[in-house]
Image 1 (cartoon, rainbow, N blue to C red):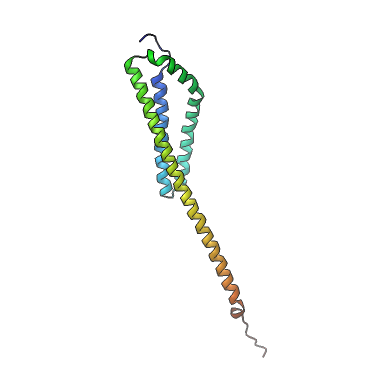
Image 2: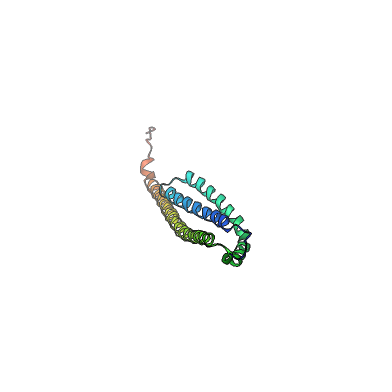
Length: 150
């Protein structure tokens, strides 16, 4: 080690990895709740995801500085610390790739549900129109009155 880096990369990268792992876990829960049609709990999970995203947004504000420091100081780190950092960065990248796939699967699933619901509503609307038309065509026969004045 040629110098003494002043930045705790392991702590920062571990915190970011934890956020990504938490998002991935919440995304799996989200997909399960979509499959189960449990939209009340889905809203809870979405709220939790938003909190994690807010944490990640704070990290993103400092990301350019962190990246610049990492490029400057990574060669000065001892072997073990650098390996830990690289493992954390690789794990984060892997989690993010899985998260993108998981989110796309959830999006596709919810879009399929929306399309099916829309089709069901159209079918109900058409059924209501058919029923109304049928009732109207029978109206003269079903609304006959007995003329007791004859």
